[in-house]
Image (cartoon, rainbow, N blue to C red):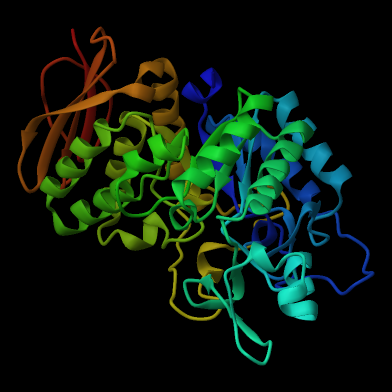
Length: 420
């Protein structure tokens, strides 16, 4: 039973870029660089923000950005050693901060040992069945990749040895001290594979949490058939900023109707390492607080992408190194942040504090009260019906929205009220 997740709020960071690591793997024999230690000055900062979880992007040995893993059992030398990772987990847990690892199990990098063996021995390799290969008469072969990226070699999830390997990796790092897994590109993997591997890992660690990256489709099938605890709520992410930009709250209401029907609270967010930052995607900066209000007043497991709490800007671009703007290196300590982000930081603190005072929001259901293109009021109601909050959003960002009940938080274009 994963009770702790009902209270967790993640601060999500991409370690390789957060710490300013090299773009590509260190040369063979190079000494590891203990960059994971650069997170330590930020741990008190994330606690001050109100978060109690650190969601780490990939930390395992990879060829470039972390999602082309070459060894799931080794810390990327650009980040340090296993001792450095142990130290980071210990520092997190000492503060009561949970740690989520990012597992890339749909595909691997071309330098993954099993694939190198296939390159060397072809169909005679003991690992040929680990990949989706098409052999030619001359012994050469082609391989399935991930979404056209030839450096990302797709695993064969019908192969029992692959399931054994993945379940072993999951268990190894849970034994090490991780509290759960984000499963990258979970949507590209057959749900029965997740049911098999997650069930095996969960048998040894019943308190672990497993969240799958699912972008489109039937979220419920991944929760049920894949035995996942959560999926990434991309549908709600898109509806939040799009409804504000278009001044069409009907889109948000539609997404919240589907959201509230999910059987398990999803991983909710308004930014991550793969998308344009909220402060850049919104066409009206006055709408940024409204987006945050939605994030922290609906059911789910909220995640704050590092820098969004400081109103960082950055556009995701469709080109090589197109993630650079949304994955910048961070200062050595929070003292290096520029002051313009403090108001957004304080707003995050305010809304996270409100959520802490109303922990039932984790499983809240959402009921529309008033809906028009530019105005939307909804009630967030606890699972037992005993608690409720009324949230009002106004795309014109009016100062005083009024409404019944006692205002417990408000700003231009938004208010949160409780009965009484």
